[in-house]
Image (tube, rainbow, N blue to C red; front, top):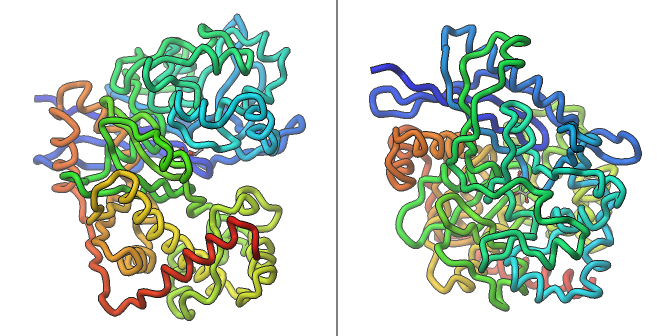
Length: 490
Ligand code: LRH
């Protein structure tokens, strides 16, 4: 009757953690064993991730776990999507990988799709058009480097490879390349040829929940770490977040609220028709043959940047408190406007946008935070409506998970604007989903539904009901504003 330990390595654009998990008295128990910073730096002409640093931090975190007297763990790795590492024949990386916010792909969609219609790519892949998709990154890649690359590995696959020596391409994350063919379930040969990549440059595809291997002896010589079996979990953080979302029945949607806000529904068959194409919804592959039919919304990135520009004088909780004291809905913005993707100054960008559209210009921290929270909530409510239309059934509950689920102000506004129930939590859904796939792989949990019940029983979820007094015109006014913005009338 030994205790089983699971480690989720969950790395986002701004930080990474090792979460240690076990089941105690029928409840999932989590502890943060290690936390570290992540971020890209401008090196050799591009914004790049320091991947070796990530490996060191994972090993550092494992040695902290060993120091607690834990001698064996299972481990799964999830990170953000789309980025990749080029590996030479000797198994070494050619460069530190370029980050998806790098400007190299700014024109790539237009260039690639001048010869290849967007409809053709969407029909094959069902994946949204984002300039940072691996397809466009590879399109702009240095062709000599690409030729020299024996292997192309997605970030979490690369980390697993360095730890174990075994290389795979896990499907949930691979789908974000926009190079998987929905019907064949394989990399699409035509799209690969379009960007000069050979089918065998990506390691073989595996489903989430397959055993990758043990951490190599060479790391045990350098670090005092537990025996570690790496399981290829749902390596795309958003796929793990959806597994870790306690939604039940047919009428729930998820909002994974972190650096990005990913809002959508879990489907059993992809939805790659015209309506989905027009709204740029995506069909990312989920664990266990599901599809994550969702939309990317710029997310907490905007407030993260503002917080950093204010020299981290205010915590996120402070900013939410200050925002609460400001009048609501004074300034509409399109949070998904590309100008907010990587501006030199987020504060100046927000102010310029407000000025250009003749609206109230936020200057204080509270007013800035208010504009951001208002507009994220508006975008969420709008997306819930569109989602219901496209999937063709009502959405009655929005499960908000991730760090953003702690912002009560946004949860309530979203419930009010969308007129639906919001269930908030768990904040750690990504790490939990990562662990759940491992537990299903080892047989400790039967399946996703059982896992979601375990999650519901283990964590405090908060429910927000819509306030009937909400002014029904706010969302309509905002939608009219958005429509004008997208047409470029303003
Ligand atoms: C969130 C995320 C998202 C992707 C983006 C690149 O961390 O994985 O799902 O679209 O990063």
